[in-house]
Each structure stands twice: as structure tokens, then as C-alpha cells.
Amino acid sequence: MVKKALITGITGQDGAYLAELLLGKGYEVHGIKRRASSFNTDRIDHLYQDPHEANVKLFLHYGDLTDATNLIRIIQQVQPDEIYNLAAQSHVAVSFETPEYTANSDALGTLRILEAIRILGLEKKTRFYQASTSEMYGQVQEVPQKETTPFYPRSPYGAAKVYGYWITVNYREAYGIYACNGILFNHESPIRGETFVTRKITRGLARIKEGLQDAVYLGNLDSLRDWGHARDYVKAQWLMLQQSEPEDFVIATGEQHSVREFVEKAGAVLGMNIEWRGQGVDEQGVDLSSGRTVVRIDRRYFRPTEVDTLLGDPSKARQKLGWRAETSFGELVKDMVEADLDAARRDALVAREGFRTYQRHE
Ligand code: NDP
Ligand code: GDR
Image 1 (cartoon, protein in one colour):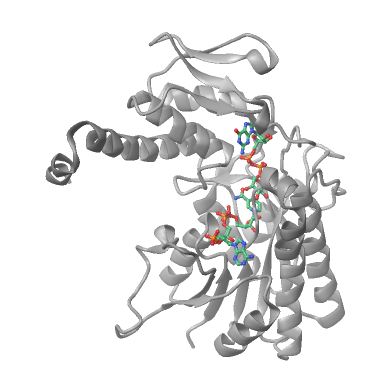
Image 2 (tube, rainbow, N blue to C red):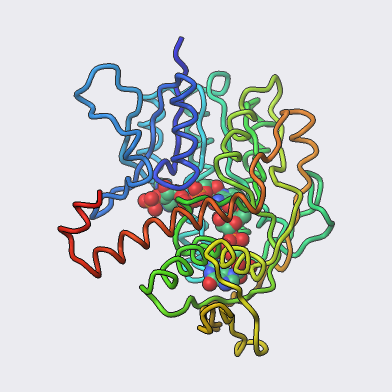
């Protein structure tokens, strides 16, 4: 029997990597996509099959986590063996601007899917994965953070995800649903959203290198994060749903770096030698090889409450799932910088010589 998976958030970073992984394992994959005024399927275009073709394995359904009847109908139609709830308003800074919407999609959205499983009588059939996050640890109560570390969220996003975490645990205990929380620490890739700090840095520095912009504006350079590669992390999501008993797992590298270090490392891949000058909001990153100021600070990127430091302990995942992060920090940064440099070179070529020359180079 071919297994069926339903992925919410299939158009996002993790959704794209997970869909690719599951299709490779022979799954029939269904994804929920929000209606937008333009195509927003760039990350999954390489997987898309025309629905008129034979043997189609990837299906997209219009839907939204804020629409319960729509979710019930899709789950009833698909009858999935596994649901991966990856959809969320996932930007921490944006959650301070849109706290109610963030709670509606990230907290109540999780409840809506769990209720749909119950209403449809799928408690024994459908396994459920919840995209929980290290942001739940917020102001950390223990170093490193593991499955038993208490939560102390520091944003509307973190608070909404704490609700999603506990409602998943509750439905597992109350109704016997195979439901798991993956407590994933930051994971990045060349298809990371452009406004998260890592991608903002790799894209910004690559564009500076190609003469397309002057500087990249950042906020708090001192934050410490445990950064891994999204391609590795979606494997853990799948593994969590293949065990005999449902459990919650921390997924992390166990290694920590600052935003500042990320900038230096990305600069080094591009041949930049970045030195820091000045203090506080006047601090600047100067590329000694060109003499140009490539990083500047902008107050708007500081958050009302910050998560200063996160470091995960992935021992339980290593022991029980046999999972470990395969990509090093250096490899992650290089992968992202090289992809953004390719894109910047294309943009620079078009800007310099026009589209016809670009077509000849393709
Ligand atoms: P992205 O922001 O890249 O993707 C989020 C996805 O959710 C997109 O497909 C987006 O659709 C969709 N979405 C947003 N709101 C809704 C809604 N109301 N209804 C339906 N779909 C919606 O996130 P990631 O792929 O990076 O993360 C996946 C999940 O994992 C998220 O839940 C995130 O909070 C969580 N997480 C992420 C971590 C990370 O470091 N990446 C770490 C820990 C947890 P659209 O394309 O239309 O915007
Ligand atoms: P985070 O990721 O908040 O950890 O949430 P983000 O990359 O946005 O920020 C990481 C750290 O960098 C600092 N920072 C900046 N951040 C952004 N976005 N833009 C800037 O210009 C900037 N300058 C400094 C931030 O203050 C922060 O300390 C991500 C998301 O994917 C969540 O969905 C997920 O749950 C967590 O990771 C784990």
C-alpha cells in the first residue's frame, strides 16, 4: 500500500525539503497551499506534476490553517497516514506586529487539525507531527536545552507554539493519537526565507560582492543560535512518525554561533575580511579587502524581547531515532553563500548587459 502524507506549509522551506524526501520514499504527497495573488510555489516547482499526467504523486489543495471546515474536508478527502503540520506564521519579529493572527494560525491552527483527526475518527489511522520550536525555551532555564527543559517564550510566536506543543501532547494522552512534537532548533538552507537573518546575510553579502547593493542592515549581532541544515532536519521529522511509540524530540546540532560569526564566515566564503568597528547601533562591519562598510545596524531589527542564546542537546534523537546533523556550520554557510552568489551573478549580468546576453549564457 502506498502511504499518503499531508503537509501543511508545503510551499515553505521545510515543506519543500520534506515533500522531496517523502516522494523519494514512494509516498503520495498532498500539500496545503494558501491562495496568493501570484505563484508562490518556487520551492516546489521542481516536484510539481501536471494533474493531467499519469501516475501523479504530488497533489496541492487550497487551504488555510485558520479555516477549520476546509481542513476537515481536505483531511476527509485525503485520508492521510501521516500529517506534518509545518504551516505557521513563522517569523518571530513579525509576530510582534501580528500577534493575534500568529496565535490563530500557529496555536489554534494546530488544534483545528487535531480536532479534524478526532471528528473524522482517524485517531488510530493518522499520525501527526507538530513543528515545535526552540523559541519555546526563550529565556533559557537550562543549558543545553533538552526535552525536559522548561519553556519561557519571549514572543507572541513562541507563546503560540507553546500552545501548539501542549495541545499535541494533550491529544496524544486524551485520545491515543500518535502525535509528536519535533522541537527543532534553527535550520537554514539556500531556500530559507529572505528575511531570516542567515539568508539576509548570505543574500546581502553576495549582492554587495556583485555590486548590486552597498550594505546589509542588521539588528542584534550578539544573538547565539544553534544552526543546522533544513535538509538534515526534515529526515528527523519523518523518523519521529516511524517509531513504535509517539514521543517528543529535540533536533539540533549541539553547536552554537553568534550572528556576528555567521557574517564573518559568509564574508570569508566571498573573499571578504570583515572587521567590526564602533559600538552599539553605530557598529559597522568593514570589509578590509575592499575598504567598504558592508554591514550596518538598524534599530528596527531589534525585538521588544530577545532570545539571546539557544543551544540544543540532541542526545535523545541520536539514541532513539539514530539521527544526527550531517552538515557542519561551515558547510551550511558555504551552501547558502554559493547559491546566493549564483543568483546575484545572474542579476548583475542582466542589469549590466540586458536580458538577451543573459539568455545566451543560460
Ligand atoms: P516558512 O516560513 O518557510 O514556511 C511556512 C509555511 O506555512 C509556508 O508554506 C506558508 O505559506 C505556510 N503558512 C503560513 N501561514 C499559513 C496559514 N495560515 N495557513 C496555511 N499555510 C500557512 O517556515 P519553515 O519552513 O522554516 O518552518 C516550518 C515550520 O517549522 C513552521 O511551523 C515553523 O514555525 C517551524 N520551525 C521552523 C524552524 C526553522 O528554523 N526553520 C525551527 C523550528 C520550528 P506561504 O508560502 O503562502 O507563505
Ligand atoms: P529566529 O530567526 O528568530 O531565531 O526564528 P531569525 O533568523 O529571524 O533571527 C535569529 C537571530 O538573529 C537576530 N537578528 C536578526 N534577525 C532577522 N530576522 N533580521 C535581522 O536583520 C537580524 N539581525 C539580527 C535576531 O534578533 C535573532 O536573535 C527562527 C524562525 O525560523 C522560527 O520560525 C523558528 O521557530 C526559530 O528560528 C527556531
